[in-house]
Length: 243
Image 1 (tube, one colour):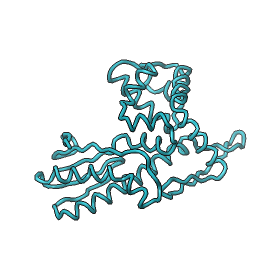
Image 2 (tube, one colour):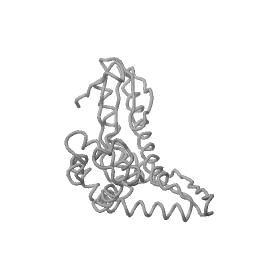
Image 3 (tube, helix red, strand yellow):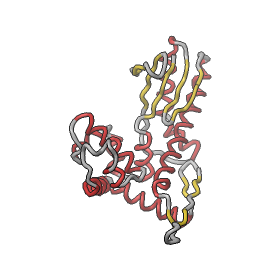
């Protein structure tokens, strides 16, 4: 049987952690339904379609999406095709999550000054500008600057969870193979009789990652990490494992 352990909202948790945004951090701690809250606040439509827009909006702004991309994306045009509308939404988002805005500005300033970004795990990201052929000025990859630190630290957190799971599974002596890491998920293969035990190990390993951050990276991770565990005969037909 396959087990899939997904780190819930990994990129959002990492962005909240690295930015220190008080509103987003409190929403995560309080387990607020952020998509639903922002769907209502930003008037992004009704029901599931509006919720999906709110979810995608959150990730795109974290990664540097602008008003033009929103206005010209078919998935968003059901809400509005107006670039001005989406510019106002982005401004309102940054008003609510002012710490994200300050952090983004700081990342850009650091990248332009040092051509280097560092995350708490010690990983370094060289940031190289290109030269605009029309005016000779430097063009900085803004979306890359905002994206790399979140994706990079998120990958390091999943690595810690994977290593911890491997250690705990090995200690049980149970038959189980760790197959892969897919973005923010860990995939394992085990006989059906082991599903509950291995599922709990994967869940507990992910929840233990903040403690591992201090041990391995010397960094105090202030937010909880939670997991969603699914299992099934294949990736298409999976069901939630109740913990």
